[in-house]
Image (cartoon, rainbow, N blue to C red; front, side, top):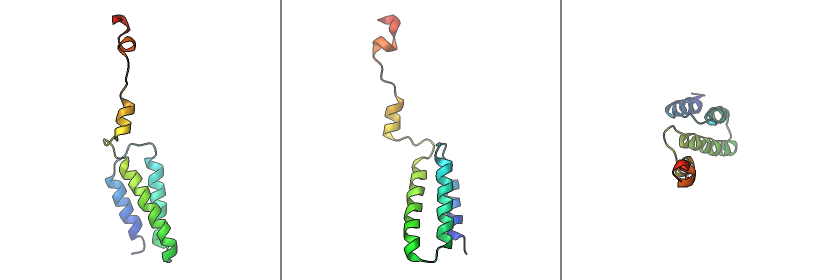
Length: 90
């Protein structure tokens, strides 16, 4: 099957629901890389394509909804002094 890598990448991406703003662009990159890999008949050309596809899919997987990393959680939590948070009590 000539398009087996692209078909599998499409299935993998469909399983990764992401609301991240870069998700659509990375999806397009992953599909382009998969198409190029399907058409590639030279191992030396395939290796860097496969490496980049793997990295792109890993990045997409890390963007799944509901899976915030520690940095996102820390940056999303406001840290305010009581004077700023409750000005009428000060």
